[in-house]
Image (tube, helix red, strand yellow):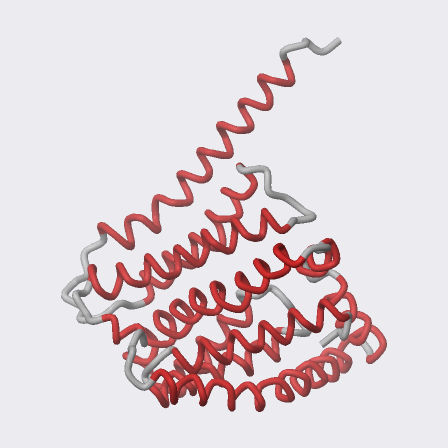
Length: 277
C-alpha cells in the first residue's frame, strides 16, 4: 500500500525538477545576452537571436508548466504568457541594440518621425494582406492536397481552425471587459512585441549581413515556423514578407505594427463570428 506521504514528496520532487529545468534553460540565453563577448562586432547576430528564441520556445513553456498553466488555456493564462513573452521581446531587444552594442533605438525601427504616413501605409497594406492571406491558405491546401489528397488537406485546414487556442477563450467571453482586454492584448501588445523581435531584431540582423531579400525570406520563414501551424504557415510566411517590405521601405516599425495589428483584429473577429478565415 503506498505511503500517505508518497504523493506530496513526489509532487515536491517534480516541482524541484521542473524549476531546475527552467533555470537550466535560462543559462545559455543569459550567457549569450549578457556575458558572451561581442568579439568586436558592430551589431547583433545569430547568437542574440537564438538566445531570445530559446527563451520563448523552451523557457517560457517550462515556466507556464511550473505556474500550472496548461491546456485548455484560459484568458488569464494566455494573458500571462503574452505579457511575459512580449516583455521579453521588447526588453531584451532594447538591451541588445542599445546596451550591448550601443546603437540607437532607430536601429530597431523605433522612430517617431513619419508615424502618420507609416500608419496610413500600414492600413493600405492590410487591404492587400487579407486577400493574400486567404489566397495563401487556399494554395497551402492545394499543395498539401498533392501529398495527402484534397479532402485530407481541407480537413487539416478545418482542424487547425477548430484547435486554435483562442477559439475556446473567445467562446467563453460573456462580458465586454474581458473581450476588450483580449482585443488590447492581441491588437496592441502582441503586434508591438513581435514586430520589435521578428522585424527589428531578426530581419534587421539578417539584413546587415545577407541583404534585404534573403533577410526577408528567412525572417518570414522563421515568423511562420514560430506560429506552429502547417496550413496557415504559408499565409503567415506571406504576411512576414509583407511586413519585412514595409519595414525596409519606411525604416520604421509603425507600418508593420499597424498591418500586424489589423490582421490580428480581423482574425479575432473571424474567430468570434466563426468565419474560419
